[in-house]
Image (cartoon, rainbow, N blue to C red; front, side, top):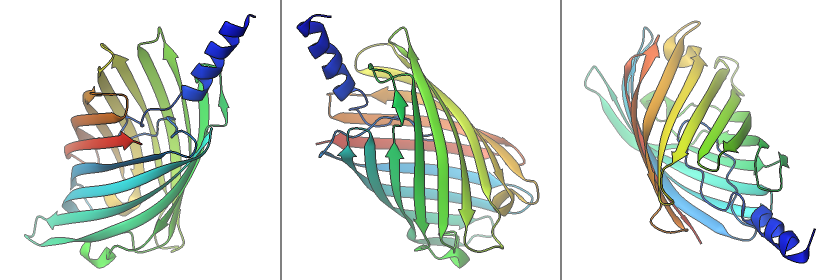
Length: 249
């Protein structure tokens, strides 16, 4: 292999995953460059209509990510939540705080296919009596896998489990996937689906299927904007929507 080819492959390997994660439901293995920062805000609106609860929530979550190593990124997020019940009550305040790490354990020289374990620590800063937080320290362990086909199609699969220090709060299982199509260098279409097993929200053996779709716009190599809308099914029914704006320094 000549020197120019080696330089090209090395550049591709180092730049792989330099853009922000584009998904809203599942985890995509896009890493922040070493010693660089990414900041942004994610919003999510969800209607929960189950046998256990009827609730409308709007989350506004500023976050920051830091590229610790080429394949390791750290992040922190602090949620603000507005929660409304069908009884007419409304609460607004600080939600739960999270700290996380992503480790792109396996990947090809081009950055895909990949395998990325990740973990999150949830701190109960939100008032659970007002529907603003879980009310207990929690932990998320997950695994994301993905690949790219024909340069334009990106496939993501993701599974995670959430456990809490309070034994009265049941574990939460999430399994999902995403499909992203780059129809231009700046614009992409995205579709996501996620199965959620959550007895705390949907009742005993309660489950929900969340599905969303939308568009991703990248006006330049540093800025990424995602807009999606969707709904939920199974033991929960209601509207679902979200947006994310991210900037890489």
